[in-house]
Image 1 (cartoon, rainbow, N blue to C red):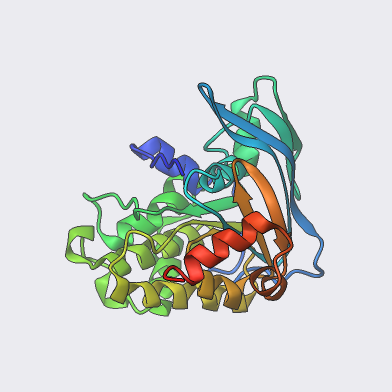
Image 2 (image 1 turned 120 degrees about the vertical axis):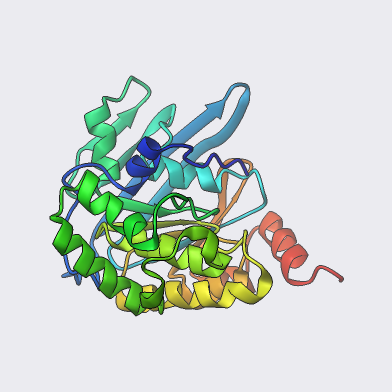
Length: 286
């Protein structure tokens, strides 16, 4: 799987959300009135040079739903996330996020249209992507104050509440190098929550962590799922996926090979390729 982290301030701000991102309570998502469709992606295709990474991916996400993407490295999972967030521009297909335009790819997409995606989502990256020269608090309020133009005092109050919620209140003035990997990733989650997005995107949030730190990050994500946040998660933690997912998509070779509720897909997969993948992950010594 290819992954290109934002390398500078502007792209990190773009990943966090564009101007005029939706508001809401700092500590919980807006409770959906129903399970109406929030995201609809159809026929998403993306190539990098001669390498066709996505070959017609369809994806639907309902309000309050947790969709988990699994599959081998290179299957296109991260590219799907980055397309939903506007960090990658697909070569073809369409993406509709409720409240925004239906974006048709294949022709040049105006910057303002890409912001329609970024306004509605926030991404938690694999490698934390915290600004090293900023404190924890400064990292969290950067998006709300600089991108969304939230008053600084309001952004600080909301950031402090979110940090307290994940057990990091006392780290507000620490710098990233003073934190463990798990603490840095929790700050990354708080930074995303501070933007009050409609959709949270997680790109393998535990893959860069020491094994003993994985649990603390997964516990925060599980709590968010229980609160009703709408999320799309790329992960290799299949046990975690079984606990939090409403729908699981198995990708391989840039296509969705199989999808379904975790209880069905993990215990009774219909496709041979899915069975082989699960056997290799769940029973590596058999």
